Image (cartoon, rainbow, N blue to C red):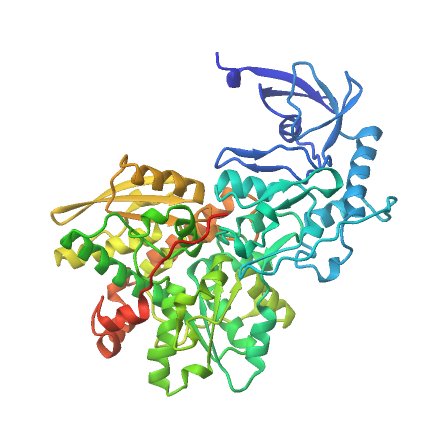
Length: 584
């Protein structure tokens, strides 16, 4: 019998509980329906990783047999163990631990980005902490604002090490780690370098798990407000597919609620001159990527071809696998394509000077901020995209403007750059980009109509997936990965010649963009990601047109402006290059 199959018995507050050997006291308490407060604990059961460092000591309980306090998140259950979670000894220990954390924490809750969404703040309320009895020296570290995507305020760090677990074990980027000892211990980068000097991918997953405001997205809302208030500007906004199935959570809706029309009308209420759909550019991306893939296959080009829509994944391969830089598609992401087309094609059509156009993106992703700032996306002194707001930032702007999201009417995207297909919608989830590309590649290669567009073998939330698709006389071998730790395994297998694919899709975040670092916090709840994913497939299934090359506005763009997929004009506007980045 395996150890994991053996059941052992314990008592939690007098309640008999049977748990598997190896379970923690916290596991047993949860099984008994007993709440024990936690702070540093992080259970990422979908990837088999649990943060059990017991750093914060907020989950202390009393072992009655031994008469000692133990951290419930790390203490393993033993047969016959008797635990009291609400004894005076346990309660006072938890209060003391929390007060000590608060004594070294900045008291700027009202202006903190995590105000009312901070786990430390919530625990202080739950434990009725109204006075801090410990006073002394506090940490004093400068804020790190060097990264285009993430801000780091070490003074708000409570040393839970959740970010370390996420960065090192899940994403395998290895940028964050604890340094020094005692009171001077901090979570920092090697040699205390600024984030902007490291190989940080800006995926934002550290932000997603940080319980306080120690790590947060760079706040671009003030810049957007200023742009909207400058009458010289023609301010255009685009909305990514994953935003519309998550933003409602910020206003009390259930996960997966589709809020496309309300998002559009809300943006108009904020003062944007035009509201475009990033899905239009996703369709454009698919046509360019499918054309590139077919060209590589027919001419003996580099295979596999990797989709390059995820900016954190691009940063990852530039820093971690520079020897594979010939495999990513040269296509820009939909965000950048939309910016480039807006400041060229749209500017020409409307007679607006591109210098007066401000392009704002609403994205589920923190890395999109860093992507928009890349030098490669500056054409004639103008960035393709000027500012990026996460789903959370956009929601805060609506609240700031006192706009009642639930009462907003349903409105449609503006024309010219607003039409899209179902293929573009599924860009927001893992496997969606490659499925959309396959729909178009099939008809490009065979010249026949694809009757069933649902490639269900590419769907799911498994970390690494493989699929084979018959496209005419060719069998396309496809690899799919989400989360950078899985991406590393897939890339190493390709580099070492263990696996051979024709095309690969990689997304840095859990579930793809639906679990992006700028989305409403899902706290590791896979069910929330599944509901967002299901909503995207529901949107796709409801569309009359489900193949990117069926987008009439995109085809008109080619007819009027780009000539054909892969043309010199298309390469000038829609393609890019990659380069090796420092790895520290």
